Image (cartoon, rainbow, N blue to C red; front, side, top):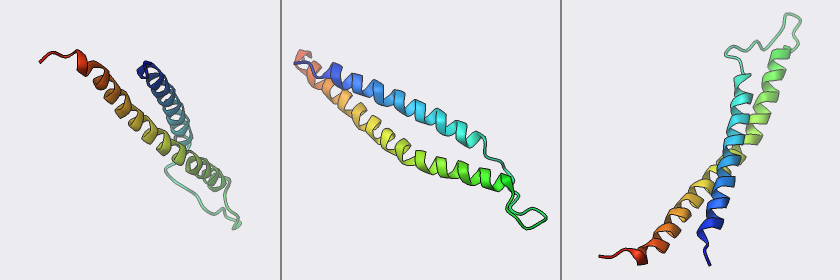
Length: 94
């Protein structure tokens, strides 16, 4: 039974998901502003501050997904290389 094609398929799916989450995270952080106006003249929080809090909440939700997908992709990459070497090693003549 060849295990390498299955593991390689999982690797492709993980990398595609990692790229999708990375693009989404980049899109979220693109909307962040460098300056933040915390209070308006009447003492209420500004709408810019509220928008920044919403963006930060979304980024904090995405960060663990990004981390786990990265770790899974790295582990699967090592597994793919290991399986490839394991399958090809008997064919190598010394």
